[in-house]
Length: 290
Ligand code: G1P
Image (cartoon, rainbow, N blue to C red; front, top):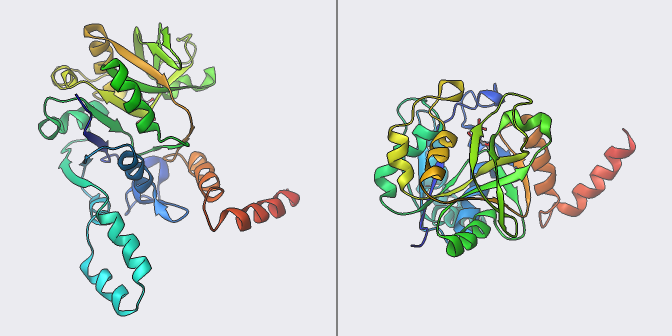
């Protein structure tokens, strides 16, 4: 069965980015010329997904508005003959079919995904976390969908991280190499205490999940941090049926973290059609002053 839907949880409070995120969703923070969330939506669209399901919370309407049609703005731009800009805005609102569903309580990532169960239904689906930007030649979601067509089972995107950072991630353990960049998952643990795991394979925010995950999530009890963790449900799913960890090609940025966000801005500016050259020149000047 093809993967047609992507769930993008955007309900988080963005406390790592206060005060910037007091009144705007962290997903709306700008990277060069578009909000973080637009890069993720574009990745998903470029990979052939047909519908996006945002899992939102109070105060996140700016995200829905961003992908909606803005009549007033369109009208003003037309009057001012700024049709090119207008076309770009049109393009954003026509990108893809988007629906949203509210997560009423902040009970964790697992609970956020579970909230989308009725809209996803009984089919495999993709999950993309709004903080994780992946810059790559072939979109990360596309790479995973290609693998899914071969294996037909759940896949989590992973990358190797330094041992002193494993406590910040879901970690895949006891792996068995299966094919290029791909491992069979035996165990996984959410944010293991420092020094308690031998694995350096961290889960990054891209997943393809079999719909069985919903039933498992409905019985998943709070785990790390008192939250219903997706990783705990994935562990249960991996005991029921095959699961794969895929080392994607590309560079991942944690755009929900101040340093990761700055790194993303530099990287995306350096691949921007108009800004790349002048920005490179500017960076050279800056380096001289360091
Ligand atoms: C979530 C997941 C974690 C994963 C991480 C990737 O954690 O729970 O397993 O490694 O995303 O970004 P969060 O960063 O939301 O705490």
